[in-house]
Image (cartoon, rainbow, N blue to C red; front, side):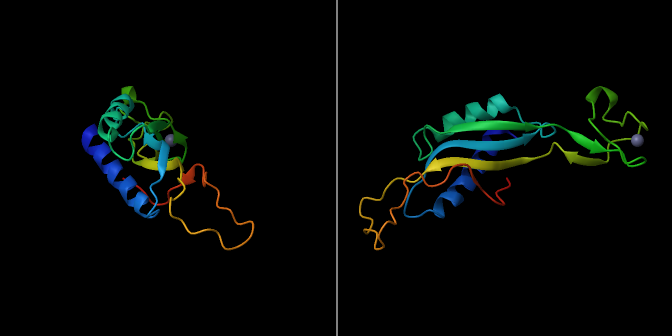
Length: 148
Ligand SMILES: [Zn+2]
């Protein structure tokens, strides 16, 4: 997939996530993205595209941080897990079996988002004593199910 299309896809996921916070607009600092080594994604290129596409948007100034996941596969004849190598055509070193079952390395998902929620100008005063709302709400909030 082209990095620009992928970034747009990522931005759509974040747009949906943002709507859960309405009317507040979360101030996003870091988006942690998990990218498998077997996804043909060029991380540097993705980070560059991110910077270009979020500039001027509600995500301006946020950072895309990429976490790589190594390619791991399971050898079907013997059940051993191994790290497939391109030079060996991804065959298992133990039984020389073609790669059939991938355990990890194809991930492409948002792992977490570091953000804060700004105080609303016209938010009603807290009615209960001592229930001041923290302004820095959540850190590294996991975003469930936001696969690209
Ligand atoms: Zn084997």
